[in-house]
Image (tube, rainbow, N blue to C red):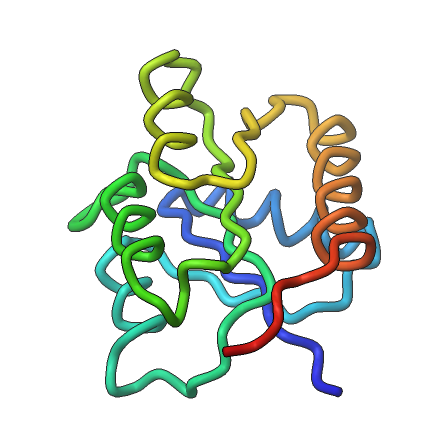
Length: 141
């Protein structure tokens, strides 16, 4: 059985670096695929260049260039191949409207990025434990 990657869709290089460091510290062994905008994520998931292997988990920022995170989530949930993928919104947005719309569009979870590195590491460790170890994924189509 191959270990499926985690797809991180994040345009802030500092947040990408912080996430990579937090995953390393948490000993999460899934490969991390990083994409910087929503269009690149659509191409990765649905495009001709796609390997066909879907990620085990998507970590999605809301504020992205080209295609924003909420529109990307809408497209993920609209396609039978990706509708069941776990999508966790990982953002700094505290706007109630973003939280509500994320859940309305089918987000599995909404996590605000903690500013403190140790809190962030702990959050990602718990996230990895739940989604990659404890959670029973849906059957493959």
